[in-house]
Image (cartoon, rainbow, N blue to C red):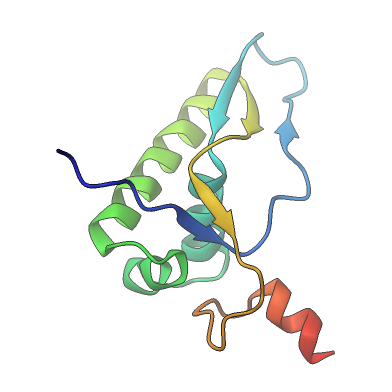
Length: 114
């Protein structure tokens, strides 16, 4: 029997979930919420894959697979002029209740500190 899949932890849902290129081809590429989170943590926040994995509470190899899948989808959307939609996936939101969430900065913990 396979091991149950562990839900990936994310800090917040994206504020914008759909991007459409001007004059692009019809169609969409769907990026999962956890793929979005991996791009946000690694590329935007500058975290290593190891720290990203800690934030998402998954193994480093899993974080690497999620990140590689996200980059491939982003490249397909950009090169082919397709829209990008962020939805779905197997995740759970950070509830802000963890003492040390592992995300720096976690939007839920930052809101509590203000």
